[in-house]
Amino acid sequence: MRLSDLAKGSSVLLGVIVAGYLSTAYVDQRFATQLRTANAPAPTSSPTPANSPAPTACVGEDGSWKNWPWPNVPTLSPKCK
Image 1 (cartoon, rainbow, N blue to C red):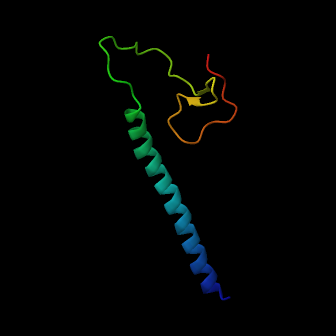
Image 2 (cartoon, one colour; image 1 turned 90 degrees about the vertical axis):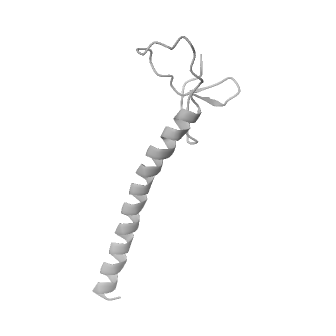
Image 3 (spheres, helix red, strand yellow; image 1 turned 90 degrees about the horizontal axis):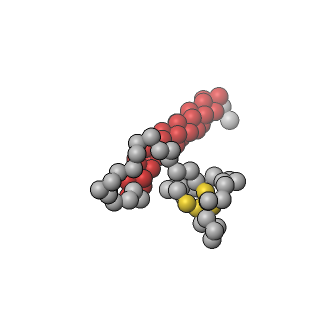
């Protein structure tokens, strides 16, 4: 293998890594926002107070995840109250 081949391969690998990182950031920004708005409850006549804390991810009685819109869930989340 010549040095020019190594340089070409390294630049392609670096380009793939950078493109993957940028596309992940783009997908997280676009689809996480859409998922949050799709799962949002319908507006009511009495809105919740703005200073209330956001719900955290927790495990329900049946073992399903609550308050977590993404498919990957945090490990060791607390049980729901």
